[in-house]
Image (cartoon, rainbow, N blue to C red):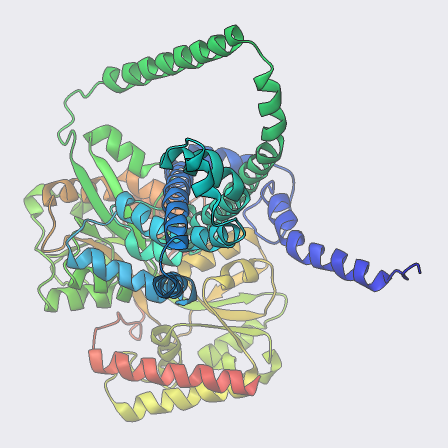
Length: 630
């Protein structure tokens, strides 16, 4: 009897495919976007592919990703296959025990595995970098290979190897000629899973790497701090590479059959051609490598280790510094001051850090920084007077400013009445006219600053009653105004005018305004956070002299201009600041680029551990209240 077809099944299958592949198509389309927006297509362009190819960091991450994945796949496939075959010949109790042990890494949360690897490498004082990442990838890939191979082995006749050896095979030949061909589908399946897991991994890689070694997942994570459409370009490239690999895997058997039909001469000719090409390539690499003139570069062969915020460095400054000094720069990235502090407190060695004001104060108090040698610095006279001698380092003994700015309100001029802002300041976040149309920034420090300033208190208050009042103010805000609590998503969302207003850093507001002329930036007269990020040298720095050289380079006109023009945050170099804001500058007339000075209520954050913990706990409760309200 002919079965009736169910069209619902086909529709469901089509919808499932659309669900999986539409985001990939969306990403590919926006990789050709002319503008910086990740959500608004402004025209066709290859600029982000050009930017990707010019970026040494991106190409290095791409190379690391696939070299680690290929090596980890090959090694884990060999080890996993041999281990699975060995287990099949073991006693039942041992086999069952090992199968359970093999399942543990797959069942464990990745964060647990990642921390375990990190502690292992720290305990044995193994320097984290490419090798530790490769070892970790091999370790977590082996169980997947074994899981794929073992069912195939169980399906074999247990006497197959013995029969082969009875017919004259050695144990090795029996393994290679008889067993392996029978379990090849399982081996291929396991190797593909291992390759996919390695390319995709972020959490374990993030915890076991160091020395500036990044794979693509870590690179994309650090790039997410700022809007960077090159993410789309490099992700599209990965999709293309994987697609080509899949095509080759399917076409390879056909090509192999054809190759077997060719004569020996053609085969030898190909081998000779490949060998000749390889020799030529080696010669060219050697010529380029050894013909590079070192000149009088003072730091030839030395390495500078920098720990900086993600997407906080210009496009050309690193390569220009390397060219001028002959040194190699290795840059790791962090996404919070607290994350940076943990590594520094645990004595991980960096030559240069770029923390924020209050964190610099903490590092000084805990004797984790060394004083700068001002005789080696020629940049102090280049700095804006408004960013020198700040409370956390009054004599600039430990720090040289990098970027500075404020935290204020970004608003849509077509939705927000400027009079409301002028009359209410941060109180506008309680104005029900804008209910459901506001962003709060997911940071206890900045959110409590806003509440405390609106209530007329210092943002550095240690008075628990005042902090409690600020907490009540924030709870009222989330319960009545239905805000969306975000982090860096606010940048692109406000550039597209998705909400009426939100709390934002001035540098991010500069980008938003440059992308959308309907956006504005307002600083309440009740005061705000005047923040500063600065370059400091840790106590355990291995190359402080080179660190001083980089501080000079990053603060002079060319380096500071490259940094500020690319990132959008306000330069500490006075001349760069004026040029970028002035006529013809990248941020001409955008007021958020020039931090406010002279307001008696503006403050710099000071470090207080007890207050920080209290605000952190209360901010968690605010977010719980927000989720309950929604």
